[in-house]
Image 1 (tube, rainbow, N blue to C red):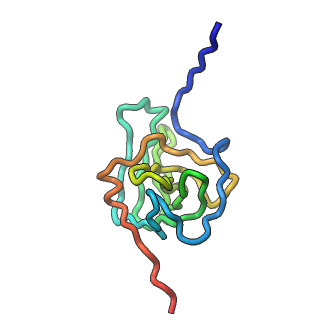
Image 2 (cartoon, rainbow, N blue to C red):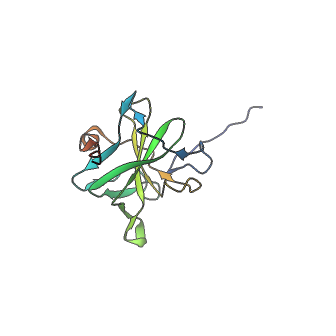
Length: 148
């Protein structure tokens, strides 16, 4: 008699995932591109109308910079300097820590997360659905001006 295992994917949490370490230097993502930071110039609203309300994350990525703060074997966590505005049922809207999880190997794999990736032991809630192309195109790659 076989055993059937059922896996339900809702919001992904990294509590038991790969260990994060502090980013050192400029990370390479998306198959080898060095990305010091991303800049978002406008608010972007993300929701998933085809998912159950309890499973879907609804949030607004606020304009600002996304700075690399930690990484694991698969990707880099870029923390938003302005945070995210989230909506969770009766909680209403609230500004929280959040950012982007960017794959080291795939250009099309950028996921939003809620939580503070600077705190290496803190669990993060990662949106299971990657950002769509139109949203990814609004993220600009930037470099800080060297100090003189």
